[in-house]
Image (cartoon, rainbow, N blue to C red; front, side):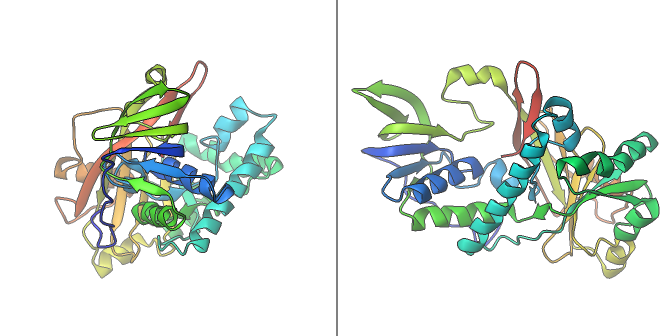
Length: 346
């Protein structure tokens, strides 16, 4: 978010107004909901409310991996929806193509690159599972490729990587600039955006839904909630959402020798096959590398104390810097259903 491209916030809502659709939350969920609604019906009046500034939550602070997978890994989809998995794979590819088309149509400068992602095995037991995945996934239309240890380390030279599963369709973006680009697209399409306007409650009045804010209110026919990890306005959703924190760290610019020792020239995203969601990427200029890890722990911050351990988890690399160049955290959320649990970064 520390970027000269960050837009100035719009004015807060300070009056009572009416609309056809009120979207609450200007992260990716809310931005795309508002934009798609307006594109499908240009005559529709749409208001978008944001408690802070556009993309200021998880949407602007995540690792920037844009995945086509709708089932949070192929294995999860195969276990839960085997009869529908081919259709879900197809819809996922179509969804990613739609995201790319929107980026191109609105000329959103978000460093959109289809670099792919490599999921690395760091333990021997993970090798067999990942090695078999391409053959298991192919009948469902999913394109994956196994890289043995030598091939994987030729791409990213880490002593702890034992092999990798490559998905060539994964896209890397600058997430904050994607959010700001969608914001601009919304404004260009006539969507009314009110930032620094927190929705505090919902009510009904004479056939209207009333969205209350600090200084005004919106009378609307329909409401779309895109608040994700934040406390939901529909209280019964509290039983299904548990905030989870994502910690991210970015190195200082690497020296030429450090960069050459690591490799990683193709800028693909890297993850590991463990269950704690470690994932890594390089900056747009390739000069810095970043690591992120997801934890269900609150009250701590990413700092110099945990910088080196996370970087060592990342690839066994040593860093000459005792502190990261940038560090931050934000929430993703776990959605708890009756049978399944999913993690989303929206």
